[in-house]
Amino acid sequence: MLDNKKALCLRLLADNVKSLADGVTSYMTNLKNVTAERERIGTELDLATKIQASMLPNIFPPFPERTEFDIYATMTPAKEVGGMDGMRYKDYELTLEKGDVLFLYTDGVAEATNAANELFGTDRLLAVLNNSSTSDPKTLLENVKSAVDEFVGEAEQFDDLTMLSITMR
Image 1 (cartoon, rainbow, N blue to C red):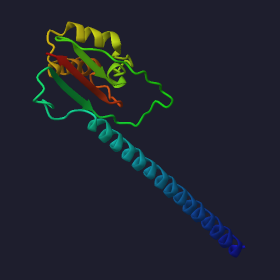
Image 2: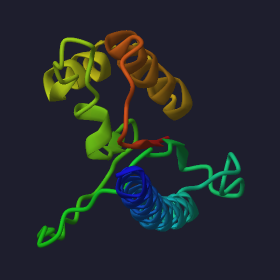
Image 3: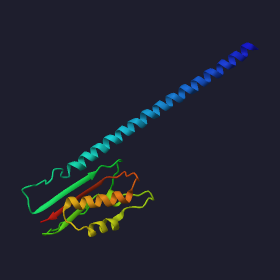
Image 4: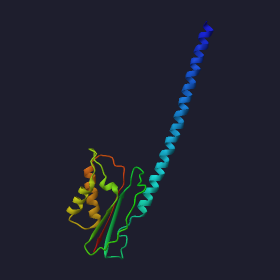
């Protein structure tokens, strides 16, 4: 009888050890997959940031010999990779005249979200732009960034905040 109890205990112990080993193996496989996915996402995010940053001027003034306009750009990189598959874009042409200001921005500006899950939105953005007493591109972008930062408070943001402004002189 004692040998049967020992055998049963050993079988139970062996089964538990196998179950533990299988669990560790499964955990390690999952950890490896999650780590690989995070590395892939990190690489994509880094590449996307570099591509986006390469499209913006980063030395100001970027064209010192050109006095007919002033340009400034800023970018706060995204924390997640997103995309707009199937998004269609329209080509536009416009003529800017002396005193005109062109403000370009990515969706992360209008879609900045506060702790109550409210969007900054285009109405707030337009209010900041329309209430700005300057046409200086750098100051204009600083005003918008400040308004977005004040609106979102401590709420974490995941999309980029990229803005570019051109003022015709």
